[in-house]
Image 1 (cartoon, rainbow, N blue to C red):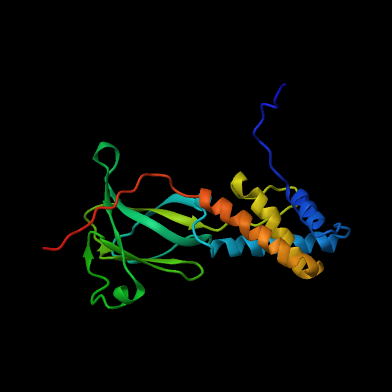
Image 2 (image 1 turned 45 degrees about the vertical axis):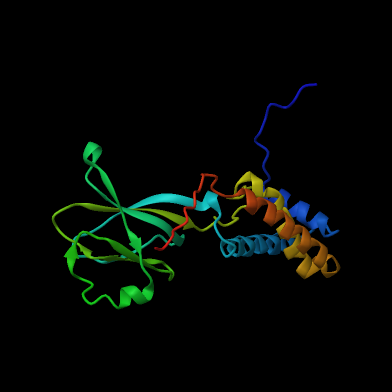
Length: 223
């Protein structure tokens, strides 16, 4: 028997909405049905950001540091900074130096935030937009680049013919979640069942959405 040879299956948002309504025992009949479902999708994507790391939303970015400038605004889609290094030099002379992330309280109590030097620490203020604080403030002797991994926001649904800004592994979860959200408004008798299915689908997808690098734990003994 022949197979399709294709691995490109995806769903446009109008198909996602149709499937979710069918799971509620309903049909999407009006423009308002579509709009309220799309609004629920965007709310669900925001909720996913509160559930932990979504690996497909992690990107590596760069920010050129300016001499004597300790504060920077990060892009509006920044959810959080995962890790960062300080890059100096270029080409074969390039070097990445680990930076330590400190808390708001630790940054607050630094006595001289404008002292010049090679940056060694950073603090991320999770406002909108997020702000980055570098310590010490970059000196003028070297050109520094802040290289970091960021968790960005999932893109909005937008047009009904768009596809979701998610890994294909989260397609079942997205449909199940939207069905649950729609049921809260239009099919409350199915809410508990759909919520259970949604949580099960999300748990399966999240369990697979992880870094599979080996980790070794070495016990430390005090003498």
